[in-house]
Picture 1 (cartoon, rainbow, N blue to C red):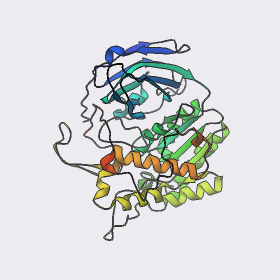
Picture 2: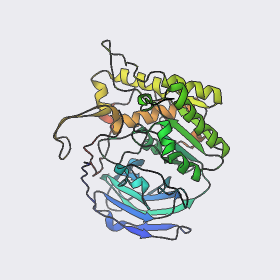
Picture 3: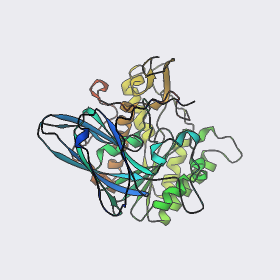
Picture 4: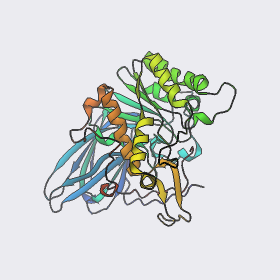
Length: 393
């Protein structure tokens, strides 16, 4: 059974007419260490403008949206200083049309990604959010993320994936819609209606990014295989996206933390990365080789050091945790943050157009062979904890 420890210090739920901007005045919440604020809005993309600053105190503020998508990270403000930062958030429900809905898993039913509200988490060492404005955006391109537990927005500590970290580095000219879910394969993603949900929101000029292969290799039914069912499913993504004027991009699967005696990463994905590269070349799609980059990343960290990028924590690290976490597939926030940078560098290298919307503070030139110092990574933890690992391995 999923065990979740939740502390809501503040919750505001408001039904609104989304055609007009929504302004939330939050000065009364400056004395709170963290809180959640939600507004009921239809599916779509929304520009969120956060006003930071307080007359009598300095601040360090973090803002995440929906299922822990990171947008503002430890943003400093001096005493009396006021800053405004804007970003785009995709909000959705399971409804595809009048007859169809996404078939989500039981554990997803409490995910903030699938409800009727756009939810923001305001936190930080000393959060100083005084106002939030929310308004509909129908123009900016959307990047639809499709994949498994290495991509999904993980709601709860200590789990995280690159799809919820990549948002931190982009400005309010592009929006990310993360449709990924733990345990999914390319074909089950389609069967559950997740692709169809994305297609129902997709417009010309959008992008769709697919990272599969982790779970696909475990399929054993007739017709399964890298160059059969898997390749066919990938082509379905390409064909459906292009029919709507969107650009498909492939990302090979992240490596598992599996080392040989020489301290080298062992290959555990069979021929699935090669099959994805084959489909990408045949269909004329850009391919980001995250499989190779994460090999470099984990080998650079080393056999023991790489544990600090994954969910490896002794018993008692979190409330109710009676046994140690030793997961060699799923990332913690630091690991997910590093992999998000790998993805961004791959997108830049391939000349993907929406990388022009990177924020100026993005540290260009990230090299997975030289990862960020884990001791300098500062993550303000959410109040939500899940002791059950995500689906898939």
